Length: 136
Image 1 (tube, rainbow, N blue to C red):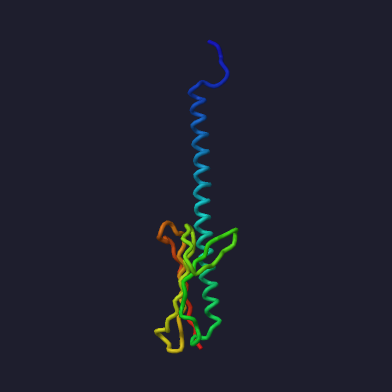
Image 2 (cartoon, rainbow, N blue to C red; image 1 turned 180 degrees about the vertical axis):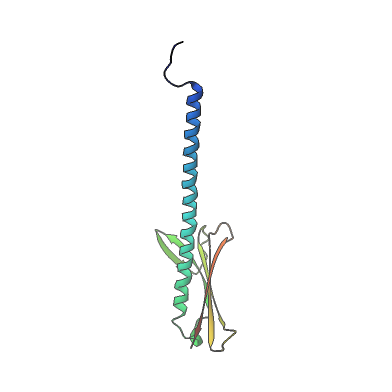
C-alpha cells in the first residue's frame, strides 16, 4: 500500500465548511455591532438635544418662560440643523417642549422635553423624555 500525501476531497470540504462557519460568525458579529453603534449614537444625539432645550428654557424665570414648542432636527453635511417645519426625512428628530405649572408648588413650572427619533414613514419608534422644574 502506498502512502499518499495531501488531503482527500472530503477533508478539504470539511475544512472549508469550518472556515466558512467561522468567517460568517465573525461578520455577523461585526454587522450587529454596527447596528448597535448606530442606535446608541442616535440615542446620544436625542439626549443631547433634550438637554440643550431644557438649558435654553432654564434661563427664564418661571413667570416669563415660553409656553413650549415643536421643532425638527436633521443632519446635513455632518451638522445638526433645526427647523420649525417638518422636513419629512427618515432618521430625523422631533423635539417637543411643554411647560406646565407645577402641581406641587404654585411658583414653579415643569419643563418637559420629548425627543422622538428613528423616523421611518410617519412614526417615531424611539423616545427620550427629560423634565426639570423651574421656579422664580
